[in-house]
Length: 387
Image (cartoon, rainbow, N blue to C red; front, side, top):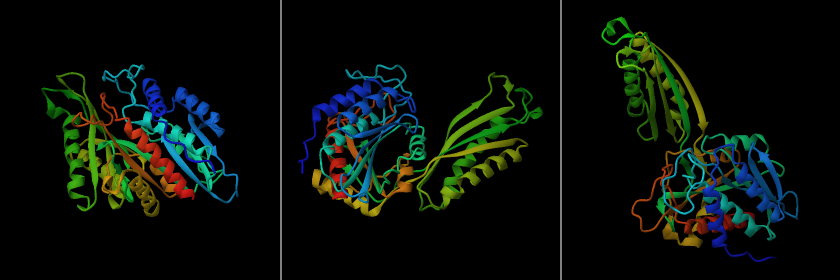
């Protein structure tokens, strides 16, 4: 059996910085996909492109029995529509687009894990799934529709997220729900416009929208089990174009986040009933559109224990955090709905800078030592799972 190569730190950093300088939005990751395909073919893996539109899948097949297990290792590729304002030499060269969530690091880690596993004799097959469009919550579903979990059938899936809420040198792993569902709602309040000096002649949709916003906030405080987690946020309000005109329409957009349970099931109905009821009370009308973008991400208990043990061997048990959860969402949830697995958080907060820049901010950056830890964690998890 070929021995496991050490992590190539220099290559990891160079790859991450190259991708950081050339960010691409969801379903537009053509340069990134080409780089990945070339690297995977150079390792002797079979490669499929265009999986889920711009996704790439590399397969290291087991030369033994066909019935042996197959593990999927997932890395997302897409960037965000943000102007980077950091002064780092590897800053984005694409105006208005930036890797502000660590996906550049995820790609670099995925390629390094593939390099290390490619020459090994393992007890099964490994699929390296480089996924598009995580930020718009469509990429995982697109890859699943294109058969990423079949031929060969995937038995387990693992992934990581570089995480600036944790210091570098730590890893967060726990079983159960760790990332929230992502739902989006849009509400049109239809009233009757008129002169701002004669509000009695109108049905003011701005006033109605204000009451709808207040009522939506009460869903968490009065319609949810207080022992379950949920967030309802109205994030956009649009109405009117003139200071002296009451418009005939107001538009609201927002999100609901939960870890599942009864509030997850009831939320579409509650949002619609609340908006329509409040609007009707003022003589207006509410039109509600509600979309589920991703389900709660739920880690399998046994495979979380496996990944936690690997992390403890790697960085020491005291550096493995068990209570790391977030109301942020991840479409890795769709892979873990289909097959058991675990999604872990690898601490990436840069040293010596105080509070790290948050994800999705124009100054986001990582401590690149987290790349080494992430690559080692995924490599050893795959080996141990297939052993």
